Length: 332
Image (cartoon, rainbow, N blue to C red; front, top):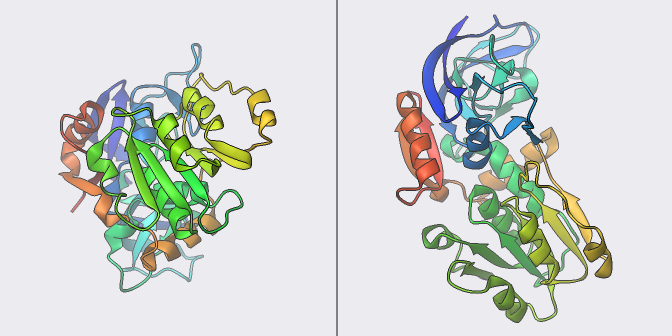
């Protein structure tokens, strides 16, 4: 069947194009997309040719990962349901992750409509909540995953490095658990979206020595520290702000620069937690958190683009010519 998709055709080249999808099977759901939420970090690294699958970096000699349909998160309306399925009905609004694609580097993609999605890539949305709030569900689940790692008592210190979407949802989750959270970033506009609440502080790393300031804020060390930017240098700095027996969480993409020394972890008996991907249980928990108002997604949306202008959306994300965080592609 025919569909339209956002396709990365070559490094730094984005097209909105017609694509071919396999005909749906009895275990598939066909979704007419209304909105998709760009994953700024993951999708941009695919666009630059830095990875070939999930958390697998591109290395010389690997197949060039183009063309590929970008993304993995969207919402829309069900317009066809396979004969083997009874829990989803035509007309319902759902979240969909991957859909099936033909003749691409990967046989699946996110930003495609209509999306022929297997049943396990579909989540029904709770009534009474703005559906757009769930359009970044996979990425919100990554932040939820990072923010639920490690033992924590109310009032314990937590440092989150990165003021992107994963950083925000990690910091929100830790704060909901009762942590005294410090978010470190480089963009005042983004930091302002987290600052101001109880047990919430921010630092702009361009304006201070954030390690020294974090050590002042948490003189006994932070119980949990999270790197969301994918920097081994940041990991090394986080060693110095943590208490003995704390939890260090890695939620970034390091490419081929992923060598972390174990001995500094041993000195402080730190636990290293690695998060990746999504699973049904965490997706379900994240939906519940958003529905209950315990994870804020809508306030992080800064831009909408018609899907036909997807290339312009990525130019904004890559150049940051004006403040940008959550970017939605509108398909209607």
